[in-house]
Length: 222
Image (cartoon, rainbow, N blue to C red):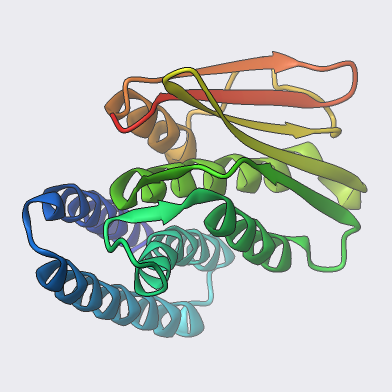
């Protein structure tokens, strides 16, 4: 069941990002209609997953479904932003990333004292690229909470998104236990690598004196 849920959500995200990219060919009215329909589809998927989570008793299944809901919600927030902008195909990345990190802090922190600091320059990108960047930030921050602060350890996560020449740099740092000797090869890590590759980018990871830093370099409007 866990594998089926993850596979279904991954395919949904792939299909949604493809629809967002193809939407450039349509008029503004059709873009708004497409965004509305897609937002409703995502809301339906989230509702079904949450019902499944409530009926599951295996903690591993519950965790897998929670991760799936989080990923779908990242894409749904893009459509929320589309409703609030005059240009129906471009997103103000700063407002989107700040709202996303606020939701991640509330979702993951629980009773632990872990702060999330966010700095994002005023950058406008296509909606399809905003969704991909949001998914990358989601996975990087989630990995920090999962691996950098074991046994209730306190700490901080810093998210920095900025433009440099023709690239967008997404950097996530933590002051946790440090980079693992070998990078994790889970679904989140594979998703980050896939999105970076699609956007003609690269992922680098380096240990800090205290903690770990991961930077994803992406071609702007790739």
